[in-house]
Length: 128
Image (cartoon, helix red, strand yellow):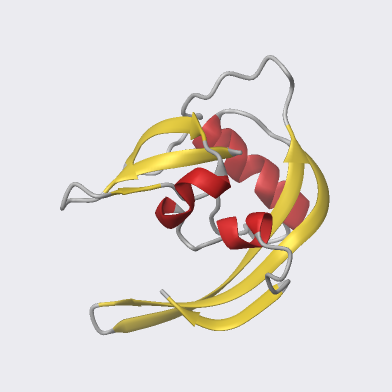
């Protein structure tokens, strides 16, 4: 699994999957391809959708509702992890990650959808 490695101001690391906002008129698949190119330097061939999460993020006095989707995808065999053309401002690297070993670093906990047979396919209203 390809992830971003982000460093928080307090020094803690996170390993979020590539993602971002969908542009007006952009399909979901087009958005995933663009965000992956920008953040991890490759546009995967997308397969099935694995997980959907409705997330409420709180920052200061603002609350934002987001919907996240996790797709199964495939990259070329010769792909080497590297930052893309427009990495996230806190992104320090791109890496391979095993969700069964690095699960607690995933934000949100999409690793659960990949490692637990009983994981829900849709998670609504999860606080971050």
